[in-house]
Image (tube, rainbow, N blue to C red; front, side):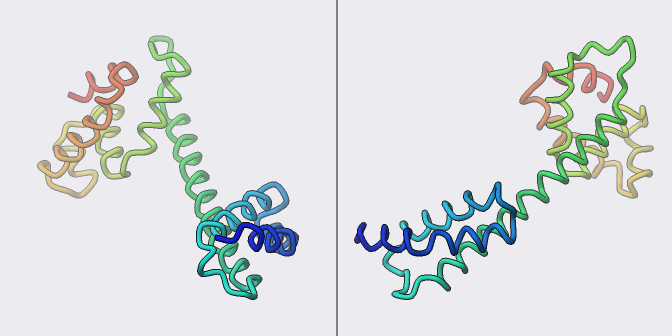
Length: 169
């Protein structure tokens, strides 16, 4: 590794990489993309060609794609949380604090959709396993397996879900 060559590359091409990133992710994230790009270059300095701009832009392009994927996943999770929050019961007998509720919704949102839906049909909608299986178009055994997986995820934080799991059993 030649630190002087890397430093020269950075000083020469940082503006180019930041400009590319800014066109694709905006000013706020452009510097993060440029930093990640040059970190990749530092770690892979042996394969960086003598004319590094196309290589750097290619690496930056990969980081831009990762940034967009991450934003889509975060947006999807936020949508799921909003839907679950809107659909959850917040009546006067609710014994869950706001923090616990947010944590519970995050655990539910992170579950695979089929497992979450099985749990919610039984726990929140009050359906039997046979009825929930009919709604989802699956066998009762399949639904019981989904419930088992959902409950296993919940057991990691039992304080959050004690009313939910009691009603779902």
